[in-house]
Length: 305
Image 1 (cartoon, helix red, strand yellow):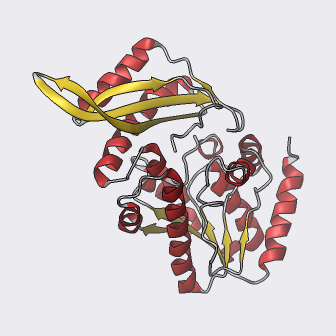
Image 2: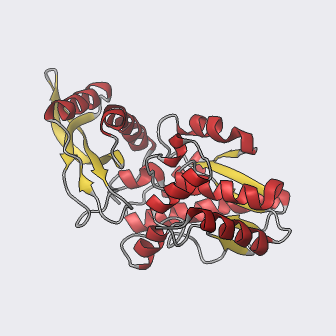
């Protein structure tokens, strides 16, 4: 396990030394990784830090407003880039292609925002599992393998690059970050795009955003999973009333894990699963059926793409 106090001292010194007098753009998603980075950078360089939250149109229900509440004190800049991301993803079905498109769009947004103030350094919350999975060919994380080769920044800093998720949470506690942030459930950088099998459309995003919210409402408070989610996995036949429906199939997944490298499915009682399925099919008219995923990692990944 990481020595949190020593790590904080070293990370603050590293950020201060490597950035010099430069202004720094910080990719702040609101998750524990980027929040720890923001706290470290705030100690290191103060007002030269420019935290930016990009609303990609692929965020969870209510996510942008909650981030505004949590991080407004940092002079957080919120950029609405939903149309840009969704238009870039139109017609793209391959998971790796989607991740690379999203990775490039993120960089282009940060470049544009940096140009407004003369920032030359990008700071992001890449952690060790991101590097392992990207470099090992499992999947390209948007902030590693999904990044374009040509970028305008003079350097990219990743203070958490050698830490696992549980170690990042320990550092968050040592920094005094709120428990809500310290224990925040992971959410993928590419957002809901990797919870949609196939091409990404505004209709599909709206469906899975609502389904995901229902799954979290029913599972998070009572069962405290390491991560839970809903994914749109295809089309199937159903019946609502006396009408035959060709509608969406939603898969619900909940897992426990220590560091995200392995994960075990959560044993959710049947009545809870039945309630989730009933709510999703009742509250989202275009959903025909709901299934529960019991596959561990490995062989599956936690997310669907």
